[in-house]
Image (tube, rainbow, N blue to C red; front, side, top):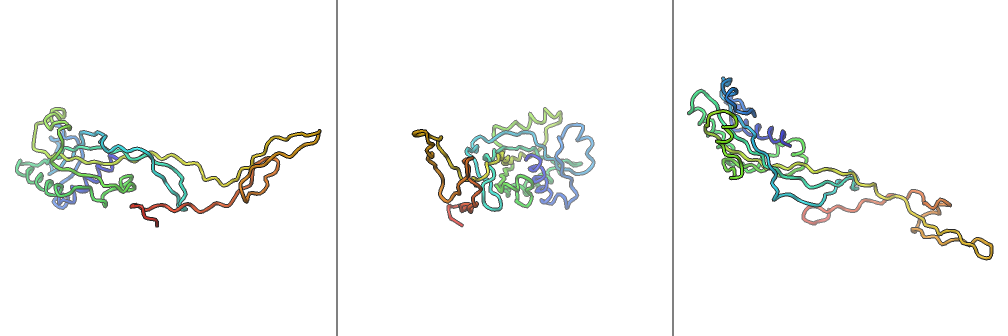
Length: 234
C-alpha cells in the first residue's frame, strides 16, 4: 500500500504543472549529500512517519463472492494508516524554491482525496477514498526541525502532507457449499434372534445411499440474492 500511495502522490504533484515546467518530482530523503548533488529544480516528497489510525479500526469480516454469487472467502476489514510526507522545493535561489512550493500548495490544498485515476493495486481494488491533508499535519507527527536534524541538513521551508490510506484485509478461504445429503442409520437391533431394521433419518428427495449411509450429490441451488448498498435488493 505504501508504494501505491507514493506513486499516486507523485502523480498528483506532476499534474500540478511541475512536469510541464521541467521540475523533477522525487521521493528521496533530502540529506545534505543529496542536496549537494541537485543540479535541476526538484520537488521532494519524503515519507518520514507512518502510524495506524486506531479510531478507524473495524471488526467482523466481509464476504468475497465468485462470479456465480457464492461466498468463496471472508475478508477482514482494512486497517487505516496515516502517511506523513515532508515536501520541499530545491532550486538555485530561495525565491525560486518558494515559487515551486507555492505551486505545490495551490495544487494540493484544494484536493481532499487522491484522485481515483491515480490509484493502483490494492488502493484501486478496495474502492475507498484515500484522504489527503496539506499543511495541516497534527501535533502527533514529528516536528519538522526534528526531521531536519535527523537528516543532517539545514532547516528550510516545507509543507507537511498527510495521506490516510487503507491496508487491505486478509482473505480466508470459505468452505464450499454443501451439495450432498446425509443419511443417519441406527445400529442393527435383534429381536427373537431376528434382525430388526434400524430407523433412518434422511433429507427429503435424497436417494437411498445404501449401506454406507451417505447420499449422492444433489443439485446445487442458486446463490441467495446479494443486498446492494443501502439495503435494496438487486
